Structures are given as C-alpha cells and as structure tokens.
Length: 592
Image (cartoon, rainbow, N blue to C red; front, side):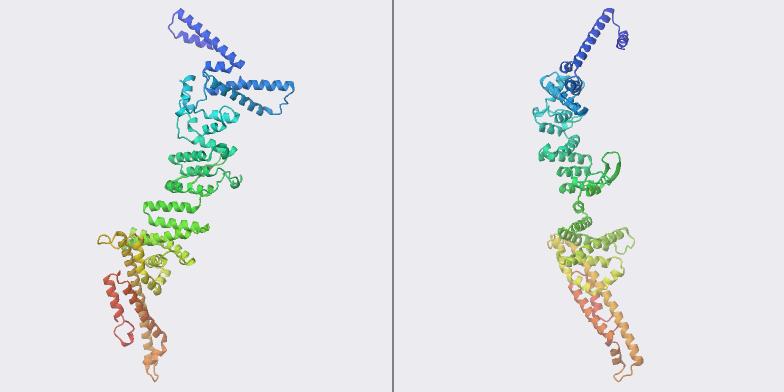
C-alpha cells in the first residue's frame, strides 16, 4: 500500500528522472529509520525513541507501560513464577497496578532528566504546532516560575506515590484550574471542585488540604455557579464547604438515592441571592445518573436536602420586600418568620412579631385607610377591590399578632394603642358580616378606641420619624398619621351615633307601648301614668342606659374634637343635646 501511494504521488509531480531517483532514495532511508525506531521501541529503549518521534507525554507514558518499565514488570513476575518464588496470588489487577506504577515512575524520571522528552503539560499548552522544546518553555513560563502540570499527571502521581516532591503539591495542583481544560481559564473551578469532592469522600477533608484552601475552593466554585445563574447549586456548594457528607442522614436506597447535608446557616448569602433563588429550578438525577427525578423549586430543594429552615427564607423575603418599599409584603414575611421561629421554640419570634406589628400599624394600615377613603363611593372600582383585598390580608396578620398578645400580654409593644386600633378600624371598614356588625355595636370597644387615639397619633408620629412640624407644615409621615387618626375618630363617633340612635328608637318604642297599655288598663289609685312606670321597669332601665351611653359618647366626642372635622363635631353635638329625634316631651328628657 505504501509503494502504491508513493507511485501515485510521484505521478503527480513534474520531476525529472534524477529527482525521482533522489526522492525514492530519501523515502527508502526514512522508511529504514522508522523501522529502526520501532525495533528500538520494542526492545524497551523508550527514552531514545520518544525524543525522535515527538510524541505527547501520555503516548510516552503508554510506551513505558507497554514496552519499557511496565513490560519489564511482567517479565520479572513471569520469571518469579517460573522459579517458584512468587505464587501469583495477587491476580491480574495487582500486576496491572504494579506495571502502571513502574511505567509512571520511569516517565517521571525521564522527563525531568531529559529535555527531549515531552513534559506533562496541561492540554491548553499542548498544541500540534509546538515541538517538545516549545512545550517545555510554555510549561515553565508560568507566573513566578510556578510550573502547572497536567491534572492527569497529578492524579497518577497520587496513585503511584512518585512524580512530585510532596503529596500535598499534587493535591494543590489538582485544585488549580490551569491544570485542566483545553482552553486556559483560571476561573473555571468545575473539575477541581468535583475531584476534591471525590478525594474527600475517600481520604477525608483533613488529609487533603488546609481548611482555608478547602473553603476557598468551594467559595470560588459557588461564585462561578452564581455568575452562571445556578443559585440553588451555589448554595449547595457552600453547604458542602461546611460539611461534605453526613452518613447518618443518608436516605435509604429504597426511598431516595440522594444524600442530605446537615443544616447550614447561609447568612448573608441567602439574603443576597433570594430574588433569583425564588425563580430558580433544579434538575435532580438518581445516584447512577440514569433516572431523571425532574425539576423542583430551589427553595424546596434547599429545605428538603440541605435543611435550610423556613424562617430563613421568610427573613430573606422580608429584606427584599423592604428594599422594594413593599411594606405589606415585608409584614407578611415577618409574620411567617415569627410563626416558623415559634414552631421551633425560638423566643426571637416575639421580636419578629413586634416588628411586623409596628410595620402594619405605622405604614400598612394608614396607607390602606387613605386608599379606602379615596375609593369611597366607587363600589366596583379596581382600586377599591384591591384595597379591600389588602385590608383583609392585613386583618389576618393583625389577628395573628392579637392571638400572640392574648397568649402573653404585654410582649407586643404598644399593641393597645396601635395594633388594636388598626385592627378595629379595618374590621369596622370592611363589608359587614354578622361578626363585624356585632363589633360595630360594641359601644365599649368604640369607647376604648376613642380614648386611645391621642396616644395612637403620638406613637405614629414617633415611629414614622416626624418631629412636630417641618418648615411650618406637617411632613408626609405626619400628615399620614394625622389623616389616619382623623379617619378612625370620625368612624368611631359615627358608629357611636348609630348605636345611640338605635337605642333611642328601642326606648321610644318601649315607652309608647307602655303608655298604650297604661291607657287601656291603668285604673289604679295612683293613675295610669304611675302604673305604666311600674309595669315597664325594663323601659325605665333602658332610658337610664341611654342617658349614660349618650354621656359617654359626648365625652368621647370632646376627647377627639381636635381631629374630627368641624361639621361632624357640630352635627353630633346638636343631636346629642337636643330632642330632635323624639320631639319635646316631658317623658323624653333623658338627652343631655
């Protein structure tokens, strides 16, 4: 075949007979030299041939394995078997291991002593157009004279126990990205991290490298994953930095082939990547990589596999809601974090719940009150529907705080003047059910709220950071606190008026019925009017209650007179102090 190829090549060249003869002589000489090299290689003299053939270092190592020191290992074992000094109980595996170690030791010695032997350069400095000298120069031209060898060379040196001065040098070399890859990339830590994970599972972290370098490798790979958008896996790598594998928490092979790590406190890392983590999804496979378990949410993976507690996610959500100015979302996240902390028996849930209470009472509810006031009269407007939906959500959150306050009174700061008032206002404002209507008729609850409004306004101003006046005018926070207090006060006095009018109607009805019965059958010696009073003692008691309630409402109206509008105040005072509803009669003089 070679002669045919040479003949075909010569036919295409316009050469003279002398040139053709010279080319045939050179070709023959080259063929003879190649045959000599092959015979030399088969004889076991690998060093003499490798410099001539210009082979890469892995091919040179293979030649040592098959024809050099490795073959001599087989010859020595065969001779020992023949002589009877070796029984051969080690088997083929032991023989191959010894053969590989001897071949690698021979190559490690030859490339350092002979400049013509190809050095174990990493793939990114091994180019076809470079000869052995150029490869060696590229290998040794690293920063500060630090030589980066091929990662495969480091692995074989760990296996054979030769090739590097210290075992730790090979370990550090494997963790260097410059020892890997066909392209030079000092920031690609994919292979170093996975090799470190495999070696750690075999030898343990303490035997590999110092703790500082171990953590640095994990942090570098986690940063690379974050830059690529794999935020869930980045947190997984950081968890591995804290603890590689926990054998006690491994799942049974029948239920799950995955391993679970001990719970890790990610701290600021979770806060930093939380927005991207919410949308991140992770694809999981079984241990053998054959079965795809599908995609799951990153939060689900971190909670189930890494043991990240629920309150951590709620805390991160609260922080990011705060950065966006979403006070309602922050309060909801704080309540969720408080519930998670309480479930695990952590007393910090009180402080977290207090923060949520302050946020709801100082920022969320006052803004909702303003929105509801602006949307009043627009029954089907989108803004009103959204405001009522937000108000119901705030009621649920405040009810959670209320339950905690009932459980441990006094633990939530200023609950009576802030959260209590805000919760009552929302319950009175939302569309009424039976429960809300009963609350609206609770005159003592109305009186309690009215008596606390002064403290409510003062606390709101303090919490919102308003100092009296700014340049002669109230600031935005002060105006918001003032408007909320006014809305609550007007709602309270109007509900009190409704209660008084209802009570007046009941008393009037009872008295008219009493007079009617007294006129029909009242023949006693004291006259019908006295008999009527005696027969209807409940009506007289209701009249006395009406007088007390009316006086209570007048006192509350005077207490909130500074924040109630003038028109409302004058109208209610007129109704309370006159007999407009019942007319002027001697028997109806229970009004003030």
